[in-house]
Length: 158
Image (cartoon, rainbow, N blue to C red; front, side, top):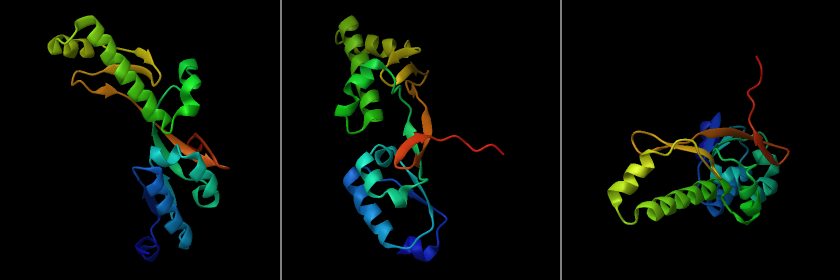
């Protein structure tokens, strides 16, 4: 009701689970709002909800963790995943730690040093680099819901 009463131009739908997204969309569908919807990757990866609320979410823009969805290894397991982008990055993280432990055992300092050497390592989530702060250099990609499908968002030409 607050969104409707505020006559918001934009609503960012940011649930942590698909069940919460369902509740949010139920409430948004009950209210006559004209706000443009933006959503997180939990929503953008929830095909059942995008289908169920197709009228409400048409044109919704999202931001997702970028990942290499055409990687043959990823395509083999994609259908088994609830959250493909997070699953891909988690898989890569586990594999990197497994590599480090195989090479260096339980030597925490050597494992840490190994992580800083990772540059353009191929994985399910694409090529990964660890920066000087120990953070992954990972991108996000803008997506849009068109006719119930999530597609890469292409900014319109001016």
